[in-house]
Image (cartoon, rainbow, N blue to C red; front, side, top):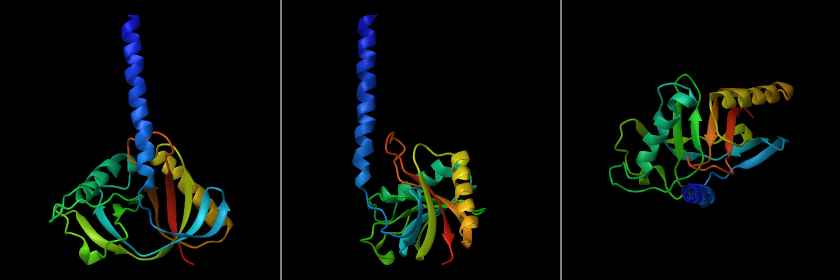
Length: 196
């Protein structure tokens, strides 16, 4: 019995170590360069984002819990070779989910690509588009996300908008920076576009 317990503890420790190593391995992937225009506190910033090329898919609804995994699989399929050239494209972060009634999810393409250099997606529900430069009000938090946590952080942004007399446009968006297997150092953000 003791031997089985030691084996179980050993295997469990190896699995945990694997997930910790994987968490650190994927932290050096490319993210869009943005400029912090203003800090409201340590977790809330007003940021200027550049124009970006994205691979975007539509979602069945705006629920992260219901649609997040399906959207992620669609666009991950594109960068893992699901395109006319079977070309693998480097993973970037964040994955962005627009939480409007016509919800979408997208990956930002690596900065080395121009739109016409990217292969066409094999999946007809994935499109390559340009996202215009924009100013976003962003709140950052750790751990794992779900609809409830996204809504509570959206409310934090609503209060900042009201308190500082900012003008928001469009819907809230969720930005996730981690692979699903990351268990530490998780980074999540909720954002909304601000009219400068």
